[in-house]
Image (cartoon, rainbow, N blue to C red; front, side, top):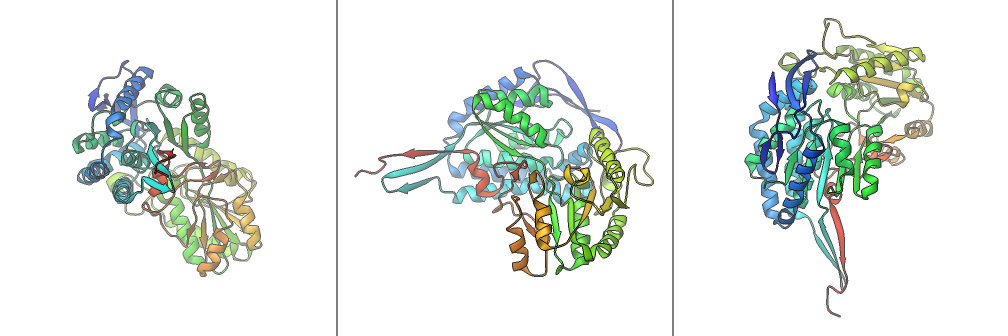
Length: 478
């Protein structure tokens, strides 16, 4: 059992005000392997005070100082990449191949992108005799999830440092160890005391208090829509800015002119990546009804080829376990709900995959003949469960795609780029991926419409969330 019982506040590792511990479970074994402390309001107060004191000087540092700091952080993550990958694999179940190839590099990439953007960013603009100036918003509170822990921390911390903000981070108590490593890396990189503070804890004990804290100027939350609503409600009395990156039920429209085998097999594999635990996963595959049978056969064959494993033993491309027991139970219940509501089970189903009698492992599951009013088509499952829905016309596909409370991401498959763009332009979602195109940390703007959130992350749009706009009238003499 490894103990990580201190918090990182004002550049030091400190004991919690009130000792209270939580065991961190390895989802592949269902056994605890580490302990952390759960924070309290008193710990948050200390962290906020440190961040507030540090803001006065850090907000005035030079662009070059902050850019170099971000590059040192990225270098530190690269140096400790194997430690970081192991922590992520142990705490949330990503196989080592995925933790090393995607989870760790995703976080590192945001720091590098932020450094580059920072050096080119325009902080002031003259409009006649008026000056428009952008300034850091102040002390930021961050609550991050367990599914892509390094990515989600970096999405918030990198632009906050770049813009001169200070911060308090509450990582997920399910996956806290990689965040502890981040604090060590920040310390070694020379991040000034108080700029970055980390307090572990749960939502009721730490997250809710951060959201309502009068000393925090902005809250940025990534997680479920339900929890995002609670953050907004808690933040409202102090009229602080709130940025939310929430759930999704992303459509993947396979147009009739697409390469069907490539589009369907690629969509299945993308759905199964990270065990389906991605808010932007293409969980609703829309296929023209005349191509349904062929698409179902391709999806079935692809899903049945997906291997399941954990840690170093999992082969490249294999799925790991669901990250925790509560989520595993939710996924199992929703798979059963799909069966009960009459969807056709094409692959997978309830229970663990063959050969597994412990761990939160789930079968790669595909449903066909799904209608958009079924529970599995409406709710974010957050597991390796793909729904295939038939459509008649292109207009019908767009209508089904938009018939959701979510609007985070979307996918369009077509052999005609202009055709794909035309369809993508009609989808009410923050992101459109054409023919499997991946993300772009430097220029993309990640975030959603509707109940998928408020605000954007990544690139210069991510910077904007952490800035206030000041208008200086009479900046130039008449």
